[in-house]
Amino acid sequence: MTDSEDERARRAAEQEERALRAIAAIVQGGDLTAETLALSNEFTDRQTGRLRNLFRRRPDAEDRTEDRP
Image (cartoon, rainbow, N blue to C red; front, side):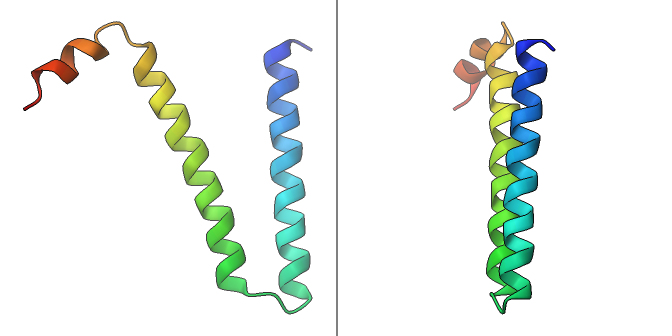
């Protein structure tokens, strides 16, 4: 496995663990809305971060931000 594959596997294991903890909390009487919102926010934050990094790597990204008012 390469480093990126190891990192991806580690993140997947962490996400699964978080989801299992949320399910366990809900089954034990936890707040369904709060748990699902927390999982959703984590997912959204990860995806937003990935997009942000993608745009930062684009060589012409800096040119476009200077054109905005």
